[in-house]
Every structure is written in C-alpha cells, then in structure tokens.
Image (cartoon, rainbow, N blue to C red):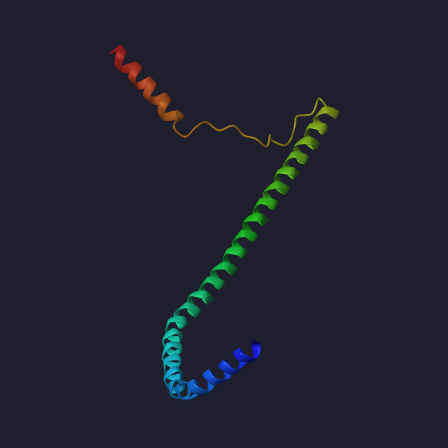
Length: 129
C-alpha cells in the first residue's frame, strides 16, 4: 500500500511541475511586494521601539534615584534620632546644664490658624459693637 501512495505522489509532483515553475515568479513578486510593504510599516515601529528603550532606561534611573532618596531620608532620620538620644543623655548626666540643642521636632501652627484667630476676634468685636 505505501508503494501505491509513493507512486501517486511522484506522478502528482511530475504533473504539477509545470504549474510550479510558472507560479514561482508570480509568488516571488508577491512576496517581494509584501515584504517591501511590511518593511515600510516596520520602520516606524523600530523607531518607536528605540524610543521605548530610551524611556525604560530613563525610568529605571528615576526609580533608582527615588530609592536613593528614600534610603538617604531614612539614614538622616536615624542620625537625627541618634543625636537626640545623645543630647538627652548629656542633659541627664548634668541636670544643672541647659540643653544646647533645640528639639528636632518643632511644632508649627497650621497656616490658617492666625486667620481663624483673627476672624473669631473680629466677629466678637463686631458683636460687641
């Protein structure tokens, strides 16, 4: 049975050979036109890809900078805590001496506190009059 299939396959390839030879230039021209068209479509994509690579590089640098900033802030906070502990220890050793360093946390009033206080005072003075 396999010999029959091989004979039919050989005969069909022999019969189709002239059609294959005639269709080969047509297929080559179609492939050439398609490849030229896709090359024109791919060129802008290559430019976009290079821009994306540049953006990814920049983004990676920015993220690294942000993490460096976070690490630096944490180190600074640790140093501030350490300095505060040292100043407290020095004050506790010599109670007659005033602390030379101001506290690291300075309480600030909200930005609108003076306006609110002025508005309350102004309304009270108007009520009295």
